[in-house]
Amino acid sequence: MKRGIQGFLTKAAGAGTESYDIYYPNPLPPEINYSEIKKSLEMANHAIGELNGIVGLIPDFDIINYIYIRKEAVMSSQIEGTQSTLDDLLKYEAAETAGVPIDDDIAEVSSYVAAMNYGLKRLDKLPLSLRLIREIHKVLLTNNRGKHKTPGEFRTSQNWIGGSRPGNAMFVPPSPENLMSALGDFEKFMNAEDEIPELVRAALLHHQFETIHPFLDGNGRIGRLLITFYLTALGFLYSPYLYLSLFFKKHKPLYYDYLTGVRKDGDWEAWLNFFLEGVLETATDAKNILMKIRLIFQNDRDAAANLGRSAKATSKVLEQFRKKPMLKVGELIKKTGLTRPTVISSVKRLIGMGILSPLSEKKWGQTYVYSNYVNTLNADSNIVCY
Image 1 (spheres, rainbow, N blue to C red):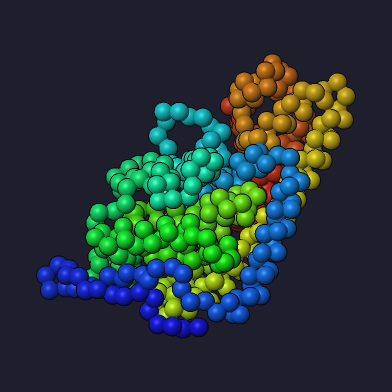
Image 2: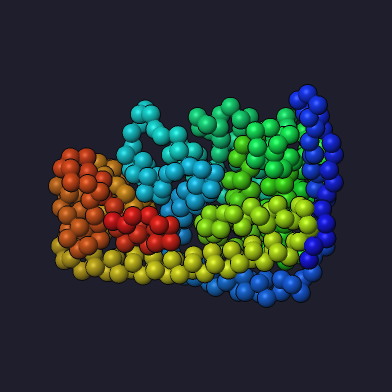
């Protein structure tokens, strides 16, 4: 349903005689025709219910969350133009090359992982607020590319989307003078108690955050994180397994078209149906992946437990690969307390069973990967499998 512009435009002076329009959004919530999104909302809510149900059966919450967070970090960063894959990130973390310069893309994805972990921990002590968003942003931009973009601080200069300057930009968000007013309204809505469905509120918050664009850099990544943080903080999600970045990445042109369309035409229902489609697809995929991982873990545990005299040591090594799916022998020795010969023989045994794979042909400093586990996570990401 088209309603016209969802805010107002003000003229600002650019270089020379150039001028441009600054967009200031109306406060949330907007008018919504719920009959147009009823079916999508019901299906998305049902998918979340099924995902929550599966999560209740997973004993390895922290272990699986480790890899899920990294997958989201890769997908969300790829939307912003990084080229690193989940494979690259896991290899970097397995290498433990402290002090060695790393690729900026990997550093940026690694910062995203740190920001997600930080935010999830802080939610235990701090409500979702502008303060927490700033703290998460500070962690996110702790890397070579972001450190000069005022990490953890709302912008004090004008930014824009598309184009080389505000005068030829596709979109110019609120000016610094009006920024805190818009953010104040945003925070009030984020914590309001009303009858708006949780998924609808999450969709509205994400759209409004991207429209306000409060930071010099990192707005897209923070805005996508906000969806999961908000639903987790509410208790609507039992665990942070709903990450929409892969869906947004697969439909990137549509994603941007819907964000722009609401601002210009006020068709909130089109955006909401798109968002809810993403929730349905993402929650269903997460549920199926968690079920597969649960089965992989159980089958491999059983196989290791049936090895007779070598069962105890092999099971101990396998447990470390559930926690971190790419490891070297040296790290396994530290984590298990086993001798080098015992670790090496256990790894060889797991390779023979088809559970582990070496990453290369080299004999020394080899990294090993829990193949089925990583491949299951990579199945929908177009990553080369082991």
